Image (cartoon, rainbow, N blue to C red; front, side, top):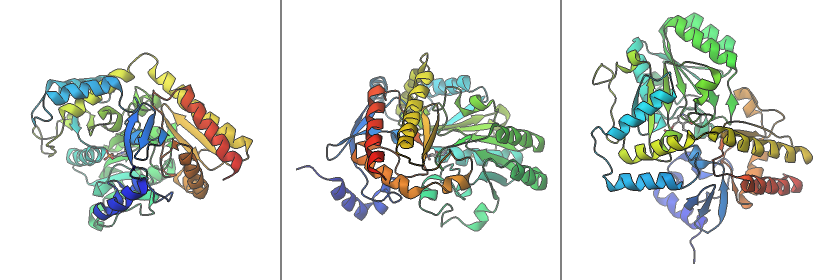
Length: 427
Ligand code: PMP
């Protein structure tokens, strides 16, 4: 007899808070029992009950090549055989650093870490150390990991649970964090005119993926760049989600924006715990052991993670990779919009590269307020109906979705057919 998702969830709740190791996994926003997975291959994964799903979460972004890509599995196996961690430099991590600096011209030096949270936290400390200033600016609904200073009006799980700012973060710790509205140029100009010379850094998701998906207006990012330069503040682009997901040149290439620092994660680790922060050489050289800003990690540059990441970055440089991925993703979003229209459902969608947003609202939102105005209940019903059909979307209306290179015509067709049945029955 197979074990059920329900049984595992009940047992998990005894030993793990909420039964999960990261909050959104608990399905609290959409209700119901989380799915416990045991195996993945390409665009599909299977739960403990043997049911298969087409995966549009891709481990929240990293799996741009799908599950268990043979080339990635091979290099990981080889790396493991040679030792899982050295706590000392390796040639492979140098290769990763060189590759990141080559692919992203704004990065002159880079340091590897193990999670996006670490990358964001380190970039902020570095920006403060470099500028000698304390204040930082973030935007409502953007999520940069769960570092205290950044966990203010954050998106993703924080937003999903209605606690965008966490308990346990002392007011003094966030007193230097100024939260502004995304895509609000006037708000930015006002903040800089009042406090510009005290601002160490502005951190922003150039395409926000933690309040569903919201694209920055090009003008918003251009003004942000200009104001940072004028006031000696560092512009930190959080490309943990967008990096090598929206295109080989990342969001900064698409927008033509040169950040002072970039944080990366997800795709660059190919499904293993790896992330990075990097940028201007003069700034990065403030890091220990060269400079006074301390930052470290036992598993930083882990050889197994680096192997998975390098192979993933090798694969996505194949000619036409992103054109194909973008086309496939648009096929999904255009298809869903067409089916929804047919049945008179208020629905919209958009994508960039292999990242997409679906909204139960007339048009894709441009602001946090517009995201909040979308119909969450309709999303929740859609989510569960699709889940029953074997289509796994992110279990929250505040998350972006992801398509991998292993999603083919067949998977898109199956998804659209399922959506057709769901919309036809009515939400
Ligand atoms: N920044 C962004 C834009 C993210 O989407 C995330 C994670 N979803 C993070 C930072 C934090 O990364 P991690 O979960 O690896 O700590």
